[in-house]
Structures are given as C-alpha cells and as structure tokens.
Amino acid sequence: MIHYTVDQNIAIISWAMTSAPMNVLNDESIPQFEAALQRAYDDDTVSGLIITSAKPEFVAGADLKMILRNSEKNPAEIRKISSELNRIFRSMETSGKPVVAAINGTALGGGYEICLACHQRIALNNPKTLIGLVEVTIGLLPGAGGTQRLPRLVGVETALPLMLEGRRVNVPEALQLGLIDDVANSPEELMTKARAWILANPTPLKPWDKIDYHSGRIVGKDDFQSPGASGQTLDMVVEMATASVQEQTHGNYPAPLEIVACVSEGLRVSIEQGVAIEAQHFVNVATSKVARNLIQTMFLGMNEASKGISRPKNQPRTDVTSIAVQGRNAGITSIAAKAGTEVIHLDTTSAPDFNNCELALVSDRFLSQLPAGQLSQAVLIVASPEQPLADLTAGFENPERILGMNWIPSAEKAVLVELIKGPQTSDQALAMAIDLARKIRKMPIVVRDSPGYYVARCSAVFIDEGQRLLAEGVSETLIHKASMQAGMAISPVPGTEASKSAAGEQPSLDVIKKRLLYRQSLEAVRCLEEGVICTKLEADLGSILGWGFPTYTGGAASFVDFVGTTLFVDTCDQLAASFGDRFLPTGQLRAQASQPA
Image 1 (tube, rainbow, N blue to C red):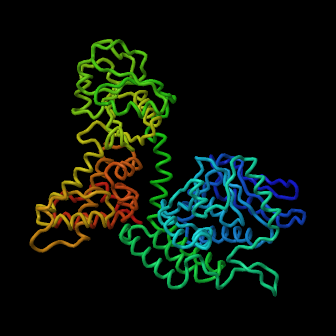
Image 2: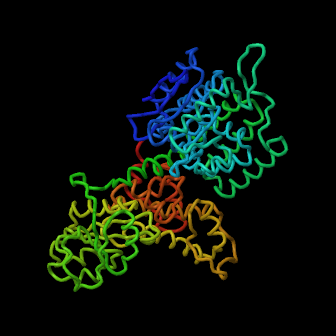
Image 3: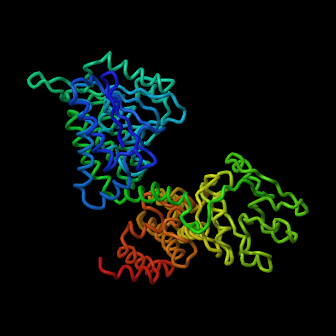
C-alpha cells in the first residue's frame, strides 16, 4: 500500500506495503506508486513531493519472484518491467516539481534507484541503514536507471566499482561517496530537512537535464559529461573494468560485463537514450540461466532453506533457551550466547543431572559413556560422529532423541550445518536441532546417516578427480587454472612445487573443467536418488556453501538443468568412454533425458 497525504502543500508519498515483509517494487506497488506521483503532479496546489516509508526500511528493491516469473515467459515481459520503471522514475525528474527522497532505512537495488531519480536524497543516520545498487549479486544489473544516474551523479570511477561489487554502504560512507546529499539525526529532522529543501528549490533541474526552450519541457542533455568521464577517460576506465571483470568471473557471470557496457554506451548519449540502452541490457541478464539460478538458489532458496526446508511440519517451534555443551563443542559457546541461549558446560560424565537442558551437544565417546538417567530428557546431538549413528545408539535408551551434526567447516566459521538423521531419530529431535541452527544463524541441511554424509562425500570425489588428473601427468597449475575458470572456490590439488609442471601432452582446460564439474554433479545426483540428502535445494546449497561449487550453475544438483539433461547425459557417456565408469549417468538421469522436451 502507498499512502498519499498533503501537508502544507507538500505531497508525502509513504511506502507501507502490507502484502510483503518489506517494501518491494512489484505488480501491486508499481501502479500505486505511479498513481500517487501523478496525483501530486496534477495537483496545482502541491509544490513538491517527499518519498519515504512507513516501515523501518525504505524500499528493498524489486520483487525477485516477479522477475523470476516473468523471465521464464519471454524477453518482452522483462523489457516491459524495466521500461515501465524507467518511465515512472524519469517522470520524477521532469515533472517540474522538486522530489526529495527521505530515506528512513535501507534502500537497495530498485529502492535506491527511486532515490537516484529524486532531486535530493536525505538519509536518516541509522547504523542499520544500508544503501547501494546490489543487483549484480543475484545475477542482475540495475534496470531502472541505476547504471545511468549513479555515474552521472558521482562519476564513473566511483560508480562502476560500487555496481560491479554490489556494495552496500552505511550512511556516513554514502554521504562521503555522494550517494546521498544530506543526513538527518532523527525522523523529525529528516522530514524537516526534506520540506526545507523543497521550499528552497522550487524548480530543480538535474545536472544532466535542460529545459527545451521550444516546448518548455525538461529533456536530457546530449552533451552532458559525467564527472571523470571525458571520452578518453571513459574508454580507459571501461577497458580496465572489462579486464578486471574477465579476470574475476572468467565469463561465467554475464551481469558485470553488461553493467560495464551500460555505462560505456549510456554515458555517451542523453539520459533518455541511456535508460533505453540499459533496458535492453537488463533483458539480456534477467532472462539468462545464470540470473535465474542465482535468484532461485542464492536468494529465494537461501531464504526458504534458512527456515528449515526439511523441518517436520507437525512439530511446534522451540526457542532452545538452554543447551549443554561438552568437550570439543566449546566453539559453539560464544555463538549460542550471542543468540541468547544459555550454555551449560559438561566437562565430565560425573557432572550433575542436566535434565533441565532441552538439548546437548556431545561427542560420540561421551555418548557411549553417559550414565543411565543423565540428560534423560534432552535431545542429544553428536558433533562430527566418527561412526554411524546406528552403531552409536545400539542398545541406547531412547535412541529417537539422538542425531548428529557436522559444522562446515567449523563451529566458529560455519555457515552451513549438516544435521544427520539416524534410523530412529524422531521428528521432535530433528525439529529442535533445526530450530537451534536457525537461532544461531546457520544454514541447516538434513542428511541421512550414511558414509561421508553429503558434503564430505561429494567434496571427496572432487579431490579424487584432481588426484587422478595429477596421476595422469596433468600439471597442478593447469588443474588449478581449470578449477578457477570453472568457478570453483578452491582447487582439488595441493599447491606443491613438485607438481606444478608436468611433462607430456596436456588436456584442454575444457576437458579438465568437465571432469571436475560433472564428477561432483553426478555424486550430488546419486546422493539425492539414494536419499542421502532430503531435497534438491539442500543439495544445491550444500554444494555451494559446503565445498564451493560454482554459484552461477545453481548448485551441484541444478548443474544438470543448467547444462540440459540430454546434453549432461551425453557428456557423461563421453567422459565415461574416455576416463572410466565413474562418469556413467544414473538410470534416472537416462530416463529423464529420454523424455520428450
């Protein structure tokens, strides 16, 4: 919902969406926002507009579900979204009335593009407020004028790195960089400053605009020179940025190069022509597989999985107010304490009765020596079990309250935790473990009690394939280069001096990349088919967060879809014929490949 009020001849347009947790640009809010703007333009008694939010945040950006939904239809739908937003935002610059962004909270992506279209940007000095054009982090580019207005505002040398890195900056840095014009120390001062600026600037004009003296309309200058963007300087900055992007992305991510192209092409023409150029580049990236993968897995998927996608639905949520911690699990102490969970240390098995604890993190040895009656009501999580849970719990009273946990890579550094469900683990125990993971802000994935579980099993085949390549005489340098070009976070081989050079004919980088990627993906598929990991989303996130599988693919399981099932199976057969049966696709993959498209 967009609130519209007029106070002392100033229209206040306040974002207050009730259909979403945060204010977003979507099919509902965009028409309402345009209608509110037009209402202010048409009212002769309104001397200016203030755009703000009734929520703690300003506007978070575009609704990615809307982008994803439309990107799967056709490019025309995506172009329509970008063109519509550009038309609306351009009207804010050309209405002839001053428009001020009273930024009361975080403004990212499309939310900050609203601010860029305003004549003045004033931000509330809140340490939680973040500002920036972050679209590149989800495979997109700013598609509502951001690639055109930010370089014109702060200069290309400042703007390009901000957009290419997707940086979020706080209010003081935003002021220093020129992303905002002023700062307020209270909500009241924010609105006071916004009103004062409108009264002092009744007919503002953007630096890149002029008044057409024939029509009296505000139009873009054809010869506007962005700060630091003379022809020669712009060419040099673009050349350097292109080289840097190629070096960092190896061509796996299209959005950064498209951003550079938007800036290079758009800054040589008027703002109207520039946003039209941007719209076409936005179509290119928004309809790409890479953007869909990043949105689906790393944004929507992360949000879904962080809530516990495999959490039993029949169990009530628990706050996990206290946990008992033993021995090598001490790393969780500070993490749990920060989350507001009381930590009780179990140093010996002769400790007092801890029946008041809801949950205990213990070692497998501690579990085997636990006296009868101690921790008799707690859910017991065995950290990094060294033997199968089925063996650990054999003869144990109430084995249904026992499960395992792997911190990846460690409790202090972990983003991801594998929760190991034993053959008798109850829904209640699993739900409580997931609730603990969520409380301490770790991503939980649920795996079956089986050798290697998921992350260790799949990362082992990555390392194994690297070792096989070395054994065949492939140089460590070439393997490392192929890994980086494929988008892996790490190399599968050690960086030993002796292995860096190799004699004999070397395979192509493409062959090495395929061997590494397909081997991992096949293992992830096998884990899914065997029920080692519960869902495809968890398999994807586990691969990206667990051992650094390339993000642009969507994850190790989704790599099959990224390539195409038929091509994936055909390539697997070719690799198997050349390098061994470990590359043979599963029966289910063959069945999927044989189905009509």
